[in-house]
Structures are given as C-alpha cells and as structure tokens.
Length: 192
Ligand SMILES: [Zn+2]
Image 1 (spheres, rainbow, N blue to C red):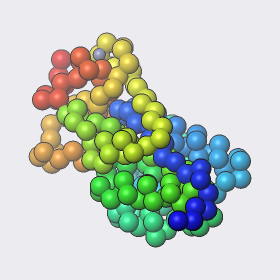
Image 2: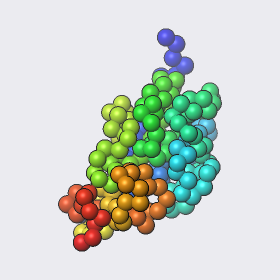
Image 3: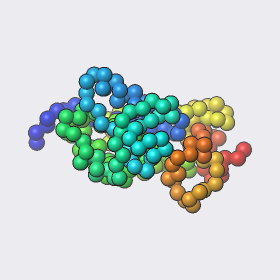
C-alpha cells in the first residue's frame, strides 16, 4: 500500500457542554492555518444554533465550516490537498464517522474531532466512545460545576423533555448547565 504521508492521526477533544471544546478545535485549526496548512471543518447539519456555514464556539470565535447530512459526505467533500480535517459536534454523527476519521488519517491527514463525550444522562454519546478508542490523542476538557465549583465533567439538563427520550435537543444552551459527577442528577431536571 502506498502512503502519501505517514503523519496522519486522530485527535479527540471532548468534555461536557461549556468546557470549551469548539474553542479548542478552532484554536488548533487556526494555528494550522497560520502554518499555511489547508483546513476543512465539518459539522452535522443538525447543529444550526448559530449559523449554517461557520463553526462557532460560545465565545464567537468563528471558523468557516461545511454542514453535512452524514459522515459519508465528509469523505466526498475533503479535498486532496487538505492537511487538517476538523469535525465538530461529532456526537451527532452516525457511527460511520469512525471509519471516515480512520480513512482520513490513513490518507495522511490530521483529524481533529470535537464532541460531547456524554449525553445529559451521563451515558456515552453516539460514536464518541469509538472515536476515543481509535484516536492517537485525547483531550478531556472540564467546565465548572455551577452547584459546587468543582471541575465539571457532566451536562445537566435543566428543563423537562421537549422531545421524550431524545438526547438531541440542540439550540438552547439555556436548557443545560455544567455539573460535576456528584452534583449531576441524570434522572431529574436538576432542581436542587
Ligand atoms: Zn458539583
């Protein structure tokens, strides 16, 4: 097999909401751009909190991005001369995103994946556990627990289910807050 380049690898940046995952993804991508590396960022179309063609952290640090309907489209849209592929909100992708990330890494690309490692129930979220397993490097970021001030690893939903049993409730960060393991209440809406 011919390897065009041997430096391809996968990095995962994960953590709860408000832990700065997208900020970190944007920081890494901008740093690569300064190094004149071509960067493409993808996100699932479901995440249109802010805009359709930008990845935007909660701190309004923007980076152009491409919204796709499924992970397969990432492979179709990655250019041959791209060096760094960012994948934001990866928890919302189908399981195929794992193979996509692996393929891109084998093609010599640096793949930076950002996503929620756990849903608001504290359960592993979508394809994230598999992405964490195949990654060369993992960064777990923490937020600050709004109850006790400890480092927060979990996301608390603070309102009732709008869609019963749905883990996909995009759009309202007011519906969530960061909590540590001990203050997180997966079975309630966090009314203390
Ligand atoms: Zn706490």
